[in-house]
Length: 311
Ligand SMILES: [Zn+2]
Image (cartoon, rainbow, N blue to C red; front, side, top):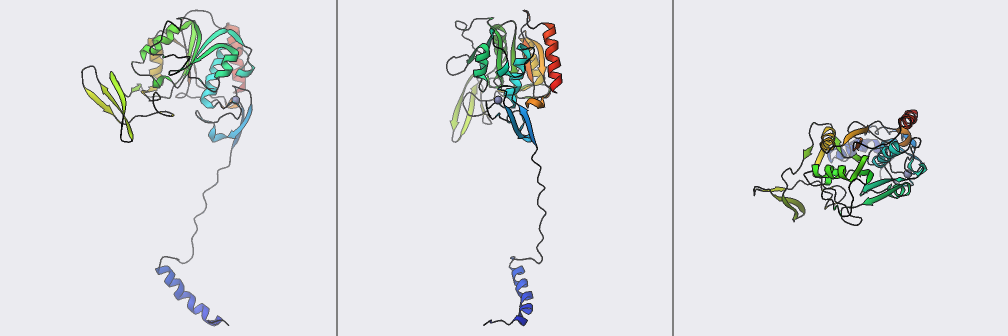
């Protein structure tokens, strides 16, 4: 048997609603916010220019550091690097895996990964590392094991911002490692500001110490002044991945030119068909040592036509 008769329910509803409202539990008619619009998932298909595998990814992921190929794992920046390599050494092939081997060309990698094995298949190429064999410290080269003027190309992607100052020494060493006509193929994180920003311009006797949970760079300048930096930026880990500077486009160009290299090419136009994202502040710089013969003019023209065709 019902305790409250049906006729009393409308009478009780109003006071109950009022009580709930006072308790903050219910407030009159519920107003619902419209749900946020759902962005359509724009999928884009592309061909990986490193391994040749067709891929399909959301368009928003096709950035410099994302858009990994499902086969070889290379992402935007690495595809851009290999685009610059095939552009230099092949007159008719953009995809590195399909390029005819050129074992007459000597290449040097600086902590390359992703495409290092393929480069070793295609060229007489050695990858090197700062902290293990084959070891190469670009700012302090051991010339007893690395012969001057022995490389046709050096690949150096997002490495130069991690080398301690003065950075000019590194560019001078790259110049010396290259054969006449050889080229350093370079990317760095960059801005379009006028000047490269050196984070620690007076480094001399320095170390990174741990204070509590923080890592701090302590430097004794040559004049004896001690300075501390606690806003360190490490890329992808700690140790020698410390960022020493933030390049600008012009600052990088100035560096290569001071070392005697010339700007042979700046790749800065994206190629959507290969998910190669490029731009004025996201470019691949090809810095060439003057002298030597490289690519015949007609082959360069043919290459240019192919590139235009896929844009
Ligand atoms: Zn791939």
